[in-house]
Amino acid sequence: MMQARSKGLALLACFPRMGLGLSREAKSQPVKLKRSLMSSFLSPEAAYVDMRKAPMLFETFLREEWLAPSLLEVVASAERGERHPLLKKETDGVYSLDVFTEKFCQTFLEEVDNYFATGLPVRRPNSMNNYGLIVNEIGLRPALTDFQQKVLRPLAALLFPEIGQSFGAHHSFMVQYRPNEDLGLDMHTDDSDVTFNVCLGDEFEASGLTFCGGVGKSDHRQFSYQYNHVPGRAVLHLGTRRHGADDIYTGTRRNLIVWSHNLEYRASDAYVKRMYNYEKEQGPPDVRCLSYTHDRDYNAYKNYPPGVTKDNAQRAWCPPPMGCYDQMDTVLKTSNQRGPLLQKKIQQADSSEDDTKK
Ligand SMILES: [Fe+2]
Image 1 (tube, rainbow, N blue to C red):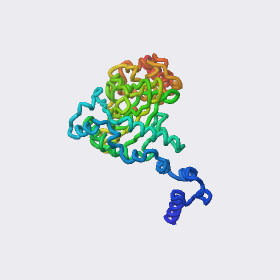
Image 2: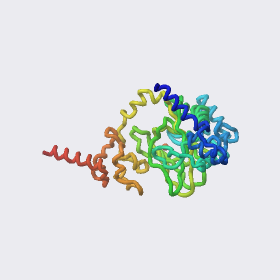
Image 3: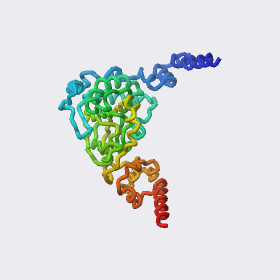
Image 4: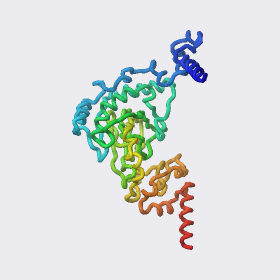
């Protein structure tokens, strides 16, 4: 009985998708209205199919007019285990290369703008960026999987051999920085094994991407390198690398980001245990590497940015107890940071010291 009822419900759920749920009046309306009515029954991805501006984009990115002239040669070298001179080492663990032509960037951004204009739902791309679009959710996942397997995997396998050998999934999204929206992005690590980040344009001033160390390493919060975005050019790094987008001055900068996931690595002991091997920080953090979202000692060195409250300290976790540098306790006690959780910890430390004196 239950099975039959479920089947009935499933069939009912299918009717609107097939157009059978539309009234006679609705069926006689202009195409645009029909699309609007239909899209209320479909997923955003399905509803967008008929509204695509550049349908070719959804098939593959690997068209000659869209790829930087050197890209396939660089990828072929990687497949032979050789790093092509045009695959530039910016600093240890950070590499860059030309990937897309201006024509591709323009086509991609026009597609994104076309999607925004439909009024279909837009989810924020990740837990930190407020503006952008998850491009997997507008139908671009197959083209990005194709690009990941044919371009990103060979590059990652060469550059990050322990983690980049195989990718079984990706989270791909466009992020957007402009005055009055997100100016930049606080220091963070990515929920990826390997991150591919390509600048698509448009016009902008200030394009820095600041790199620090790897999470759990003694230099995690020490400055490493400042990369500057160039349209059409991409940067590759491990997701565990601490980095942040510098504030934009003028214009708009939009980037396509692919977080590649190695599912075998994520199921391994090495992945599970990596946070248990957290190294002690070599010293106080470089102020360029501080995160107001994640760092417990942020306010000891910098004032919180406008709009960020001291309650951020409640969610801050970095460094964990085993990672604290020698001066960390003193720094926290003498700072003006008084988030409730830290306040409690400081009080507890003070009372235990008093107990010791007794
Ligand atoms: Fe990131």
